[in-house]
Length: 336
Ligand code: KG4
Ligand code: ZN
Image (tube, rainbow, N blue to C red; front, side):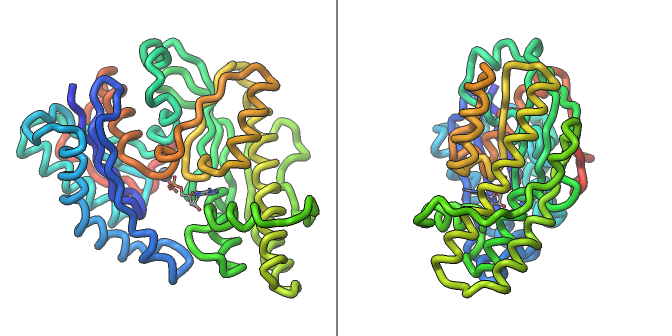
């Protein structure tokens, strides 16, 4: 089956072609540079960018996959969660495409895409997915959550009670004037920190060993106050970045360790923009190897928002009976 997916939930305009779990193309165009002066995504700018770029990105995805529009057999689209205006552009485009070609359309939860993204290219896993019990970790700009999973069923174990980890990276970077998106900027700055010195920033919600929820707003405020009272040198920004990154990573690692212990699954699937972070990847791999857990981390190009994960998930869901129709609407607050 040739599946095309459209993903426009935030500031990336993306179209992908997947067939039998194999990614044939994954075109992504981002409006990230246009949001940079504002230190965060401006929804109106993101929506307009999607309107301008969705057609060329779609053409690029078909060209790269070497298929024509008539080859498409299933259209998948991110239906939520995300920015309402941004979701609407992708959904309208996908509906028009499905209607014109008279092929089925399937709305896919963006978080399902991130959860399953680590399995892209893993043919053994995909072939036996329904029997697979695993633990999933999603760390992105909008979400930080842990799940107990079986095949395509997901049970939430814990989630952030305030800011998502990526959002905390973005806000901490904004405080220090490091630019947007904050994640890569903080990671770069952290790598410049010369010594092993660390500012003891708070690691929230670790005292109750049963608790799998996250909270990053206190850490963000601690960075704000520390920076306000500091000499604001480049050297200080490097130290704060390194200390902040360590605090976020420590909390994610400890909560993931607890989730793996609770579920008893020997498999971890992780996804989301923050999974791109080298320090987090390194520590997740170390945690998994110490506990004889197999870690499935998507390649870096598949960590941030992309349509390949939506096409990949949509194809799996469709083959298990999931269906939508042209009454599909954007669900900005969709949960998982
Ligand atoms: O998954 P994603 O592209 O969008 C959402 O679904 O939210 O994640 C975007 C988030 C941003 O907050 C960005 O700062 C963060 O991922 N991010 C990173 C890194 N690269 C992107 N955070 C930490 N380290 C990185 N290298
Ligand atoms: Zn995302």
